Image (tube, rainbow, N blue to C red; front, side, top):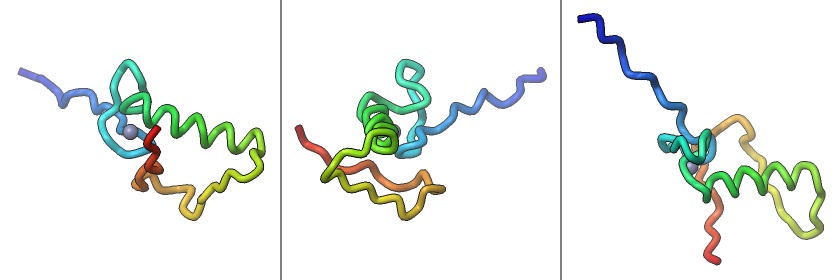
Length: 68
Ligand SMILES: [Zn+2]
C-alpha cells in the first residue's frame, strides 16, 4: 500500500478556496471575474477605477463586494 497523498489542488489565488476544475485556477466565475478585472485594470487604465494594491503579494484578501 503505497498510496501517496492526494494531489493538492491549488487554492484560488483570489480568495484561497479550493479551485474548481471548471474555473481553475479560480474557485468560481466570481473570482475569475475579479482576476480578469484586475488584469484589465492593469492593462487598460479606466478613469475612475480605483485599484487598491497595498499587498500585491498576498492572496488572503477578500474580493470586493459587488452585488449586481
Ligand atoms: Zn475564489
